[in-house]
Length: 395
Image (cartoon, rainbow, N blue to C red):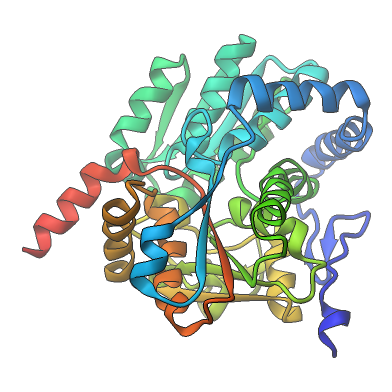
């Protein structure tokens, strides 16, 4: 199959990207998701909805954010020219707010007053709590107990914004377990609750919704790189956990056959390189699973990447060959976290540091005529205590 034939990822009416996606949910949720899908299709191209979304992106989130030339890092590494897409400069410090604003405006139009969400690194939880405070909605956030320990500052931020944070102790106390509990809540309270899912995962229509709202990342970066360099990048790099920042960073380049798109994941949660097809949390994707089909335990120093599955669109991009996915070690991630901080004065989130780690290895192998865009999905304020602990433990 030629590259041209594999470059286009189509989503069907039932939310399938090739063989991945769909909606495998209890009957009582099927009607809720169908209503959500209808509302999304109705409003996403509605001029009034788009105008309101654009207003909040500019006046509340602070977009558009810069595409920063990493001059010192480029010179130090040699090879390709490195640009950083600065999602870390958004209000609340990450890309998550883009999708949250879109979904919260949809929830308002659907008459919801109670919003629930899951969170791993805490950035989606903070963004959801922020939007709920702005629109005076009840907010409940499910978060794994282990992630609460690792992201104590974000937990306080959510509570300060008026959210109720519920610790999930079963399983590993991580992102998968928080999603489990959020889905249980939705099953019990679907008549009055809007589930604001933060990543490009879950049953239809969530992956398509998240892609739509996060595509603003690559819409901006494509325009910005053409203004700065007069040409498209050679490669676009983003970290992948569930896949929301990456699908947003890739969106406008998927049809650009000469642009490589690269996702980077933790070696300890190598879903894209070691996963096999399975149904998890109501959708089909590549998933790390045991011989009996149960999701395997995962671990990453970046709480936001600690998930055994991946978004269905990423799964299709992988099997079709359109996108490439690689792993990096936690040692490489910690070094990248420090390297970008020292050379550019930008402290990246541990999640984003995975993309930086790949770039540090890849850029020197490339020509000076090549261009890399790295999506800095969030800032590292939330991670400095954990990084300090990890570095001290190595001494």
